[in-house]
Length: 97
Image 1 (cartoon, helix red, strand yellow):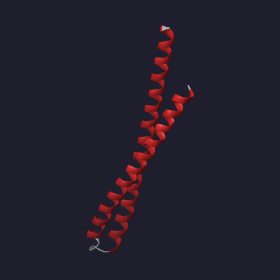
Image 2 (cartoon, helix red, strand yellow):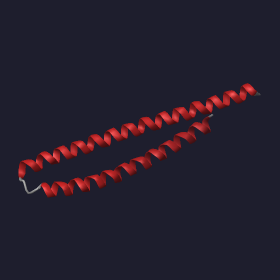
Image 3 (cartoon, rainbow, N blue to C red):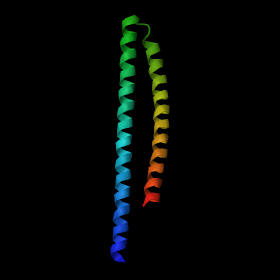
Image 4 (spheres, rainbow, N blue to C red):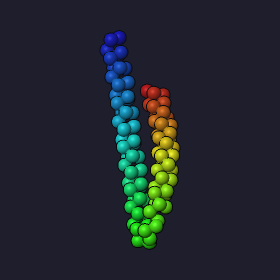
């Protein structure tokens, strides 16, 4: 009986560890992708604006503000999707065994 309980505990611990690792990896990947996208967008827009005129500095600030709000919304959506995926994975893991 004790051996069976130990085996069950170890299996659950392994499952939890796997889920945590998957979550961490996904989050890191998403963060990296978002950061890269933001950097690319800002660099591209910055270059374009500086080439045109000096007056457009105010517009670039406004664009950056809108960018941050939209990126925050995108990040929130991505996080929600990740949470849904994780819950589904966890359910599958627990149902299968």
